[in-house]
Length: 364
Ligand code: 5AD
Image (tube, rainbow, N blue to C red):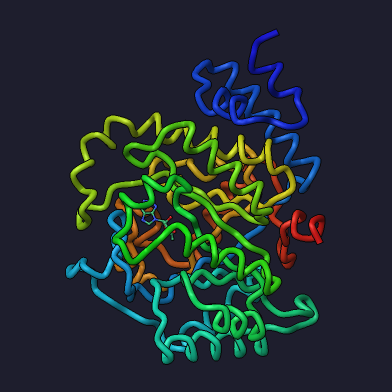
């Protein structure tokens, strides 16, 4: 029996096993990994794909992450903040489409005006989207970065029940290389713990293929997800953005493109094999790298996709990385396009269902 086959038969994988999976090169081995990850997903979460309409409502950011296109030092980014009414209108549209959940994502701001704004928007979205089909209104995932405990609590009380905060990498060395000194790995970890304590379904994730990142680092990331009892995972390939200090890696990343994409697939599968009942998103960055990247992610064990619902006019201004797909499309076009892609996989969309992380209920 091949080594991979033996590993895949184990109930619990150790770091060495994860490294073997992540470094698999043989096509047959990779197909075995994919199949096993898919069957674990099917057994623990079912085969449905759940939608979260992704609304990028502001690119104003106080942080200066070296990899990110909307970092505060990027003077070429055209900054925007959607109005309350624009956001609410889009949220209502999502509910009408049967999306059932929305992700409100923005650059990080900690000022009172912003926090009041978000809280108010959450309250109104909840109020406006309760219906017969959605008795608890639209499911809301918030993704507005590091905040203090009281702020997280206010957002939770206003109706956000899931929160996404990527750890980006759990390697202290890499985290330092990617962020200015005012941002620390420890502070992110503390935020994740606060979110959990408040009662959110907690999501995190990492970037895959960061220059200097090893397979061992990624295995450690998975172990971190497991130790922290994380409910939802969103990971994607690191992609260079020209207007960032990491632009210097452009050539290197171009050469590694296929490897990084394939590694992203193995990473999704490995996370599924280890964490089993969590929700895993096939992220937009996968599609920036490969025209059918998100579908592939779903075949490797992901069960959530995030159709973009950001208004067309500002999509180009919310570029965290280059080659962001669907920049010239409208939300209704993304709806049709994605639906056809998922049908092509013979999977059903869980319309009008929140599709919460099974892990959240299993750990409670
Ligand atoms: N490539 C890939 N992902 C990126 N993100 C930010 N910049 C990039 C990039 N250049 C991701 C980060 C962040 C999420 C919202 O987007 O992981 O948490």
